[in-house]
Image (cartoon, rainbow over all chains, first blue to last red; front, side, top):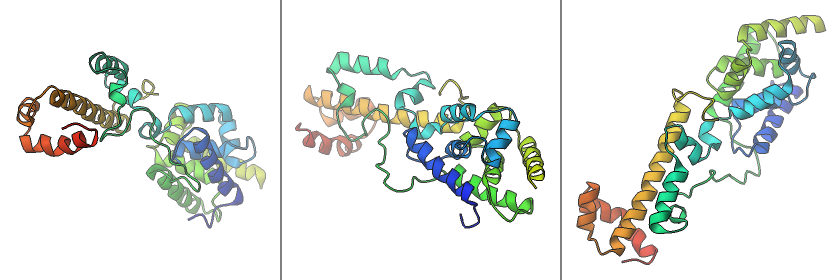
Length: 192
Length: 70
C-alpha cells in the first residue's frame, strides 16, 4: 500500500515507528503517525500546515504522546484508577494478609506492571486506526486528484479517521479537517 | 492520561475491565491457595466462591501442584 507514497511520506512512517519505540510502545498508532509527520519541522507540507494553523511540532508531539492509545501502554494501575480502584491499596491489603509481594507471585495470570514489550526487531504493527488513516490518506489523495500520497494526505487521513489518538490530539489542538485541507491547498498553490 | 480522557471512551473503559479481571484472578489465586493451606476442601472453597467444585478444582488444582501444594 506504500507504493504511491512519496519519499517524505515514507520517511514520516519510518519516523512514526521510531517515535513509537521512543515512547516504549509496541505498536504504531495514529498518534505516532502524527509524531512522524512533524518529525522534520517546517519541511513537509503536513508540518507546514500545522505550523500555519498555529500549532508547533513540540505541542503536537506532547499531545500525541499524552493521548497514546490507553489500551496499549497504560499500566494496570492507571486503568484501574479510571474506575476508582486503587491498585496500591489492594496490594497493601494483600501484603498485610499474605506477606510481601503477595500479588506479584507468578501464577496463571500475567504479572503486574507495564505490559510486556515485544523485542520488536523489525516493524512494529500498525493499529487498526493507523491502517485506516493510511488508507484514508490514499482516498484523500484520489479525491483531491493528486497523483502522489504525501505527508499532507496522511495528515488528512489521520483527521478523517476521527477515532484514533492522532485525530483526538489534533482536535484538542483545535485543528479541523476542513481547515487543514484548505491550508494544504493554499500551500500547494503557493508552491506551484 | 486517565484523567485527560473521558470514561465514555471504550478504549479506557475496556482496558479497566481487563485489568480488573486480572486483579480478580490474582486475588482468587491468593485466597484459594490460602484456603487450601488452611485445610479447606475444594467443596468448601467452591461453595463460598459460588461455583461448582469441579470448576474450582479444574482451575486451581493443577496450579497448586505446580507451586508445591497439595
